[in-house]
Amino acid sequence: MKAAVVVLFGIFLASVMADPELLQDVCVADLSSAVKVNGFVCRENITADDFFFTGLAKPGLTNNTMGSLVTAASVQKIPGLNTLGISMSRIDYAPGGLNPPHTHPRASEIVFVIKGHLEVGFITTANVLISKTIKKGEIFVFPKGLVHFQKNNGKVSAAVIAAFNSQLPGTQAIAATLFAATPPVPDHVLTKAFQVGKKEIRKIKCRLGSNK
Image 1 (cartoon, rainbow, N blue to C red):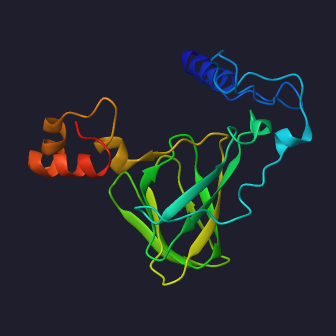
Image 2 (cartoon, rainbow, N blue to C red):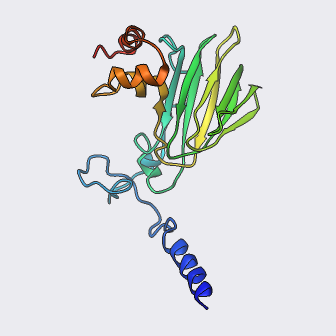
Image 3 (cartoon, rainbow, N blue to C red):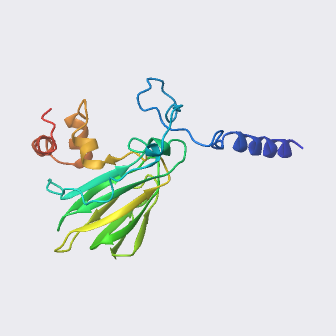
């Protein structure tokens, strides 16, 4: 009898802790509101432009250190995405360009190659690399929260359209997170974690924009 009660109580907890269904047709984000909720406060006056975005139509500039550019179409660009649990990005890569190792703490990602070919991969929590070369018209999936990357090894530019099951997936670039944080991660933590000297840590911090 006690076991049955425990099972029923567990089912009840699972049901009440699940994400709730939408309680309205739309909830266009009020990005200017100072009220903090798990998402954004709804705005009353809405237009078609709240659900519209042209930012993924054109290639982004890739003349930077990594040779890549992510153009996000999240709730911050499309307020109508608020509470819908979806977003997209366009990622452009110069020849040799890299979207460096990073994670999305709130979403899984699926990429569709629209130009060129890429070496892609993610690392499991058992430190196993799952990697593949993908080309135009092909798809690859990166599970939620796992470190992943994309690299253009070709001699021409490449691009993908990425979709996420979150209105705001969040991105933590591993190198920038560790070496360009504010305030900075202490040198003694990084020297021990990476088994290198303070000189090497300072050099990496300097290159990534942190001189502290």
